[in-house]
Length: 261
Image (cartoon, rainbow, N blue to C red; front, side, top):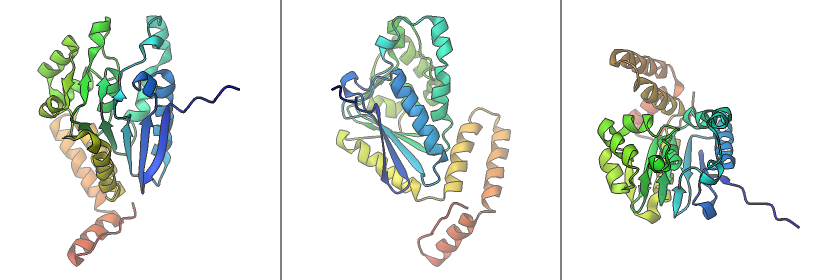
């Protein structure tokens, strides 16, 4: 009798308000085949509707976060077929998730794997992690943010070097470029990501959601418009119960009890 294959994405509500998404294709260095992409899109879409969730941690295993796209699924694909797949819709479910997303990166985060990490809001990398956009070595180029998100994160000259050479770089290099948030010992990568997630999950959800939304939306509009957006967000939060609770708790020197309203 055939055994049921293991799921390509493991989802666990590991802490109050925190979901852990773990890519589970160790035999392929967690390469992103269509099954993984679809599972990620579905899980992120469901999480966005789950009122009990406050933060998502996305990871792979100790050897690979995700070592790129699955080349076996791509080698015979035509340009028309690639277009008809509309993979951008699968990526959009991650990009549009209103919850903060923390990527815990160990091992390889290459090509689509690095692009996946760049969809997160915070990246915690193990000190032995290796990142890169090696698509040029296959005669192609990044197609899920590896040029556009990267240039916004590290600037034109670093992005050009990374994408045009395809060379891998270390977690320390990534930190120096501003591509990751923190570098920690390898065995502390996931614990540190979960610690940050728990800290964020304890914050007022309305404020957290607006901070994420306004940082992302404000980055690509003129400064005056972005500052207006920021002010409107602040004004909105002044009408929330959590604002009143947070300030009252501060004055009373007690821990606030946020309710998300």
